Image (cartoon, rainbow, N blue to C red; front, side, top):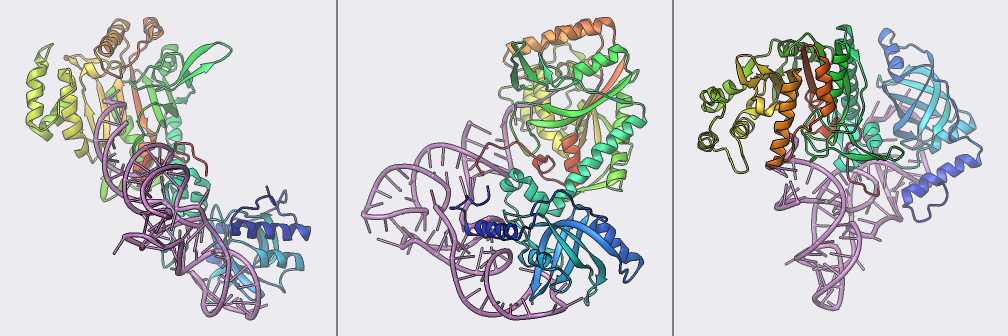
Amino acid sequence: MPGDSVSESDILNQRLSKYNALKEREINVYPNRFIREFTVTEILSLFESSEDPQKKVTAAGRVMSKRPMGKAGFINIQDFSGQIQVYSNNTLLNDDDYFVFSQIDIGDIVGIGGETFKTKTGESSIRVDKLTMLSKNLFPLPISKEKDGIRFDEFADVEQRYRRRYLDLAVNPEVKNTFIIRSKIVSHIRNFLVAKGFFEVETPMMHSIASGAAARPFKTHHNTLDMDLFLRIAPELHLKRLITGGFEKVFELNRNFRNEGISIKHNPEFTMMEIYQAYADYEDMMNLTEELIADTARVVLNSDQLIYGETTISLKPPWPRKPYFEIILEKTGLDFKPFLKSEHPSFEEAKKMAQSAGVGTKDLHTFWEVVDAVFSDKVEASLIQPVFITDFPRAMSPLAKSKPENNLLVERFEPYINGWEIGNAFTELNDPFDQKERFLQQMQMKKEGQAEVIEMDEDFIDVLKVGMPPTGGLGIGIDRLVMLMTNSPSIKDVILFPLLKKKEL
RNA sequence: GAGACGGUAGCUCAGUCGGUAGAGCAAGUGCCUUUUAAGCACUGGGUCGCGGGUUCGAUUCCCGCCCGUCUCACCA
């Protein structure tokens, strides 16, 4: 509230007294409308076709810097498209407008009218004869200065940047750019899939059973129905209901919620895209994945390559396809394949092999967990260039269809880029009896102490009894894809408002 | 959940081997009508994250807590 912040710091009081001074002159500090005819970039482009366009323009934006000189001065204004220099003085402006000009603060949002010109030093500028305050800044912007491409005292406090993203966006151009790229990635993915005949659908975010993935859910409650609900951890089982109903190509690109730890690669709410295609299998999904991601990079980054940190990654298809057990052999020298001849591969022998490679095996209970620990510890981080890891163990994949030639493996793949799992895909299990057995196995594992399993969904068994066509399904973690394409070190850098603990500012 | 590190002016940071703090930018005043990290002069601005303890005295040392970053665990 203006006027009541007696104990506020000086700088805020100074802004308030300017606000009051403007009001005393009956200048509307928050007018309803200002008609701007040009964006900043449109005005700058006028200078490309003519050295001195001398065009009358109006524009609007936030004051980002000011260089007053007596009764004249320069300010820079910034709109979404860019920044431009503005010049004015007491003879160009009428009394009220000059008062606004003389009182102007960095952070104010103003509308301007004037004529384009070039300064002595050759900078494209606007000579302003009409200045309108559009929104008075009462809280100073954490502005930084720049010379020769070097930023000084950049607004860098990570916590403040996340909590007050509006300041971050206003002041740090590369942050704005990251979110522009994110938006372009998401739009392009939608365009790409729609062009291929997929329908975007919206399935429930609130589930009575949190299934479709193995993760702890957030719990909520519907009052009127007096019913506990879970925020979805995956849309998978609902999308398969649509395939069962006769949709043949669907996708959903929206939020999932998992009540798990927060890390550089995990936010409790994150964006997942899931795609299902009837009469397709995991091979088709591999083709789709590499085409989709490479095409997105071409459109958004204008390149087949991306640079993440020090690493150059080529997204050009085709990506190599390496079976899970093959890549483990290749990277560690450990050959677990002979075990696949037995229905009950030896846990003890696998443990010895893992230990020989320096992989810790405590808290592991099955052969499959041991192999997975080897994969996680010794293989994943080395998968820098895009690769499809295929043919995972059935025991770890309760929604995927077995391989015809070996019942212990399933038709599943995970695309890896930069050592990160960026997706997960199967030939979907559509045999209701097999599916029921897999759910029961998961429940058994839960009893035996495995913290997170895929929950039984009885209704989904009934769905499969109606008959779901053979189907390929694919999930891609959009946030991680955006991290790669924007060279962002943390998932928080690609989520506008990442979850932080509550704190008074 | 564990460990390491951090929180000092609006922003970026320095500092106090314990005697209640500084710089640059930002801000205010004055001068300055083509500057651009504008310039020159002067000035104001801080419960040193919060709460305890030790001490004559704590922003500094100790303990607890809050918030954040990173690493690990978890997230198959």
